[in-house]
Amino acid sequence: MNANSLRRIPNLKTILAFILLQLSVSALALTYKDRPYDNSDWHKIYEKHNITVYSHKPKNSALVVFKAVGVLNAPLGPILGNLREVEKTIEWAPNMSEKTLLKNHSDVEAITYNDNDLPWPVTDRDLVLTNKLFLDEEEGYLIVETRSVEFPGAPIKKDRVRAVIEYGTMAFRPVDEKNTWVELIILVDPKGSIPKWLVNIMQQKMPYDFLKSLEKRSNEFSPEQLPGITDLEKRLRKILEKKMAHKE
Image 1: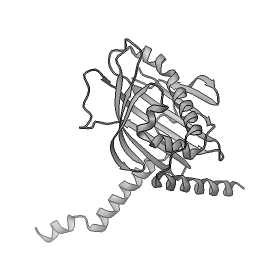
Image 2: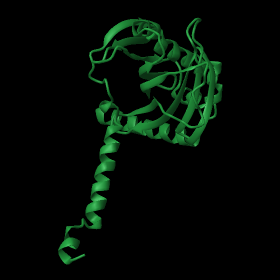
Image 3: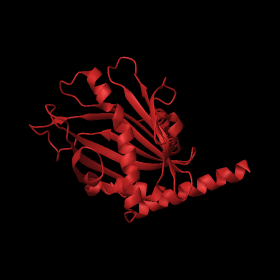
Image 4: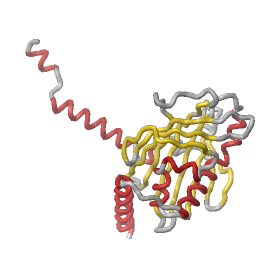
């Protein structure tokens, strides 16, 4: 290799600068304002008990995205704790017959298996999901991201149809010590032979039912919070305190 060739090789500083740039772009992608469907044309479907449910039909898709926004009459801590207590989710989540921890990455990230009962004659659905809690420091939210993944330890069962969550987020922010603002956005493809128009009708109640069940559970039971979740909640509260101080 001659001297001219060596000069054409990027130096270490250039490589590091490129890596840092990519990391910065990735970090910005985690801000809640950059989420998909943020500026979508949402149509209000119904409002009930502090929860408003909207729908949006993306282009080139027969399936509808649903959004539920409102205030849960429950503290943020128990809400996060109950979402993270994987094995006990079947005690409160609607139509869920099994919830298993497949792989625990950290206090705030895990891969899980869901088995969901559907009314006869529809075949039951299951899902393999990656779930991650992160803090949006810029906007001031705690966000749970959920989407389907393939996992070798959870092969498709003959008596189940493997559904897919193409996009799922839940954003949380404490209103006060007893109430929590929430926004849930989800796009689920149940797969199989169910007509898409029927899927869209069947799923209208899903966001509301899930959030109200989570609210009820969080008022009845407060699991011990994992350190990683506690840290994110404390950091969120400090961010919100600073935002309030700037407004004043």
